[in-house]
Image (tube, rainbow, N blue to C red; front, side, top):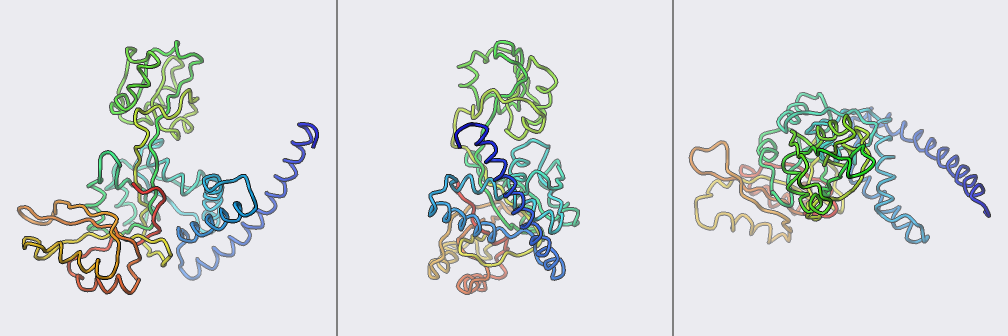
Length: 362
């Protein structure tokens, strides 16, 4: 290949081959969907997707390929999402509005072509799943700065839906505008918290003293910026893309280590994989007795079960001061040594889900 045109012709030929192979893959996927629909099997299998990505990453490394794990994941998660829609189209409910980080998290796992339902509260997401109006739900459960999302835990404690997957997403803010020069910007829209999170960026670019207009969501900020070429918005990447506002600067937040853990909810149980995590809520019957929590956790220690998180939560079903304990540990609920521990505490434990642990834990 000596010229740019030669390179382009080669790329076009490769693209044609890729399309042919993808169509072949989707034919097999359609058959998989027929089998699963006949048996009632779950369409979304995070453990299977993780295994595929790990296999492809190893293959790329062995062959000296240019694609690293992040690139492979970005490509194949979209392929998986298209495949699931061919197998059995499903609705995905999420904490809205459109263009929020929860929307971005949902789209990162279910793809751009899925059928999404934007809802105004976490409670509404749970209700939508329980009434079967959607198959999957996506809600935040923990933030690296603000801690546990109490509403999500409280609803999990009494809901029939379970955690089937988790993902950790870094929270990055974008500065978006239709203005061609930063000097033309006369006002900036964002959530009130967004201005504080990006104060250093605003000072560095002489934007600290122009009009800052707080709105109810970063998605709303992007909408307003799309309507006024002399304004800008501090918002998520997906909001900028959704409302077609060009990004002038990315990752403008003062602190770059903020991330949120999201959970995907549904009504089925995952199979056992080699990378599982389980979440439970524990209400100790003798919680007021000294050492009751220690005795409970000792059973985990004796079976070499590693805990990744433990946090107390006020109980909503007791008078006075009562507490639940939210616990994450490594392993699947159906593994014999875990069953041995939990069977001792049947009346005290509420199982919230077993799922493939996410990358980059908080």
